[in-house]
Amino acid sequence: MGASSDPNQDGSDEQQKRSEIYTYEAPWHIYAMNWSVRRDKKYRLAIASLLEHDFLRVWRINDEQPRVELKSLLNGNKNSEFCGPLTSFDWNEAEPRRIGTSSIDTTCTIWDIEKETVDTQLIAHDKEVYDIAWGGVGVFASVSADGSVRVFDLRDKEHSTIIYESSEPDTPLVRLGWNKQDPRYMATIIMDSAKVVVLDIRFPTLPVVELQRHHASVNAVAWAPHSSCHICTAGDDSQALIWDLSSMGQPVEGGLDPILAYTAGAEIEQLQWSSSQPDWVAIAFSTKLQILRV
Image 1 (cartoon, one colour):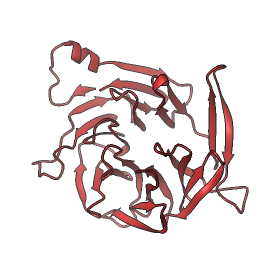
Image 2: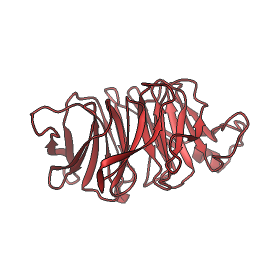
Image 3: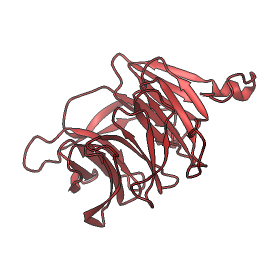
Image 4: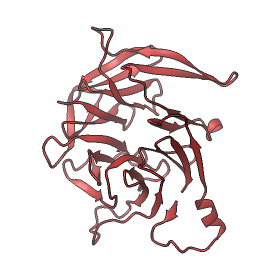
């Protein structure tokens, strides 16, 4: 990524490192991707195309024969062989046996993948749930077509806390990122909006800052895995932007500007920041995966 504030930097070793970009072109459109969290496999990524099925599938990677095998096929609907299409999932890093999924049937489901059973299923929202993110061992949040961000604590399954609601009625929230380095903060994306809303869960309803330098709809957000105040956003303007939020909460004339920017060859649909190698960010657009040194 290049620094947005100084495009004329000299050709130092540091700048050469920052300009490293690697590209892979898949034979199909990339709909999802993520980095390996294993320290011994830190250069490995997984990418996926689209398969219209409604189940949670857990796969096992066989390193000896290199191949991927289906381990579990999990259906959250106890009353039918069908279940509502899943929109997203998040793996609990603190308790790896737990996976949370969100669905268009308004529910969030917490799975115990070791037992291959539903641990908890909640009617989380009034409309479709588009994303889910863990904030700790037993705490997760979700966003929905009803325009709200809600936080759930598995110790009290009957209640949730509404952290934010869209200022315009019935405006869906489509993505959610929870800051793992400082769980007081999360970020959400409004459907068809060029801004990212950053929230402080201690002060519900009011954004702590709004990031407004994209020129088209934002599609993805990723907090830095090694820093509490850096976040990356990407969208239909083909840009991936990195922001320093250390000054958030303080008035900034004209709004906050990104500290780094990269322009891809098409609209960026996916974004992931490597937790095992924080110098690297992966983006996906159309059939291409790009790895950027930041």
